[in-house]
Image 1 (tube, rainbow over the protein chains, first blue to last red):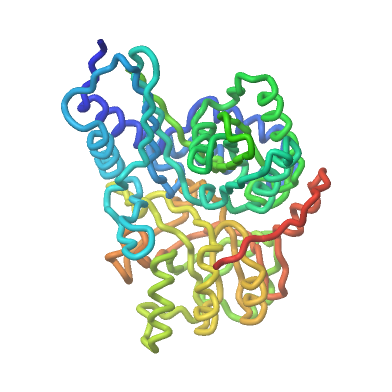
Image 2 (image 1 turned 45 degrees about the vertical axis):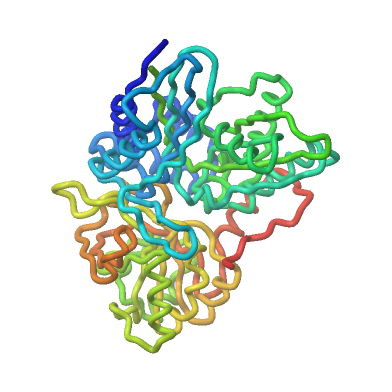
Amino acid sequence: MKIVRVEDVEEAIRRLSMNVNYFINEDLKEYYKNALSREVSDSGKEVLNQIIENVELAAREQLPICQDTGVSIVYVEIGQDVKIEGGSLYDAINRGVSRGYKEGYLRKSVVRDPLFNRVNTGDNTPAMIHVELVPGDVFRITFMAKGTGAENMSRLAMLTPAAGVKGVKEFVLKTVVEAGPNPCPPIVVGVGIGGTFDTVGWLAKKALMRKMGSRHPDPNYAKLELELLEEINKLGVGPQGLGGRVTALDVRIETAPCHIGALPLAVNLDCHAHRVGRWEL
Amino acid sequence: MTKKISPPLSDEILSELKIGDKVLISGKIYTARDAAHKRFVEAINKGEKLPVDLRGQVIYYVGPTPAKPGYVIGSAGPTTSIRMDSYMEPLLKIGLKGTIGKGYRSWSVVELLKKYKAVYFIATGGVGALLSKKIKSAKVVAYEDLGPEAVMELQVEDFPVIVANDIYGGDIFEEGVKKYREITLPFKIERISEV
């Protein structure tokens, strides 16, 4: 049986909080460069050059890539054979976030209550924590700093089965084109299909948390991911919505079985400052 | 051609700004985002004086990260402007002349900008480290309790923006996107509006 100490989790989360905000992943940098080589609009090229310059500066001086250092999404996959020791896992994650956001000079962007008492909690807690039990003795954390510009432009629809692939495509394209400049394109698009009202949003977020360029294991969905990417890039939105050919860098889909009468669909957008980090024991 | 301007923005300066113009702003600008706007408008509705005189001034929609030791400010890029749309008219009424953010404004605000002769600028979103280098000083001048949402007075030097909506009713996003669209959409594109 593998033993995981919560102090180690806290430390991992503390480091991830800072690192994802200062250092963009190497693979994502390649996507920026590739976007620059494909973009034809002058404003689009200028924006992409600024994005590249910005991530280099951020890494060099350890400054946050974006001032919206996000709400912390923490996805924990725990093997059935793992035992967690030393206290509450949830508390350890939140201590890690609190320390990372304070020590790392990151912005605290969480309010205690959504409606009546919007007072900043002062340390970016609580994190949005999702725990899933998996086979074996793996302990894996995926951490995402999620800015709200793109989150606010995300949409959910309870389609009918008759809507089919055509209906899914239309809703994704409508979400992206109507979001326009607001989610800071070029964006990354996470799509959840299936499940129920509550699970489909999480599927879309999980799709965003996957690696850049990773394809759905089912070839039908893998093909749909690429078709959606191509069609999104024909919308003309372009970098920062000023017009151009690069609107999205990647589209990823997660799916789940669903009711005979349902076709739940969620589209979760992320900005070009797509900040995801991983830690595994 | 890049234009250089400094607030306060006179009618003459505003009349020369057209959508798509690249502009470098130098001088004093104020920061405010959701929570500060709510307080501004509550104060106006109660007939109270605002903590800052916004006549002719420019508001930058930003909530920066805390400054590291030796820095004047942390990362400081624009936030999504549309969230401030429902607060716009009272501020334009008292003489606000410019706002800086990212993303589009609702059509009702595009109209208000024309009516009150004010300009909306965009700065590139998600490049907050880069933009922070154009900020030479920063001090909190109101609502300190709001933390990252407090109102700050910034001194900026050649802060790079683009005119997105001018006093003539123009809109940069409509123009730009049409040029590059290569797909026919089976639905009408609607711009979201503030509640």
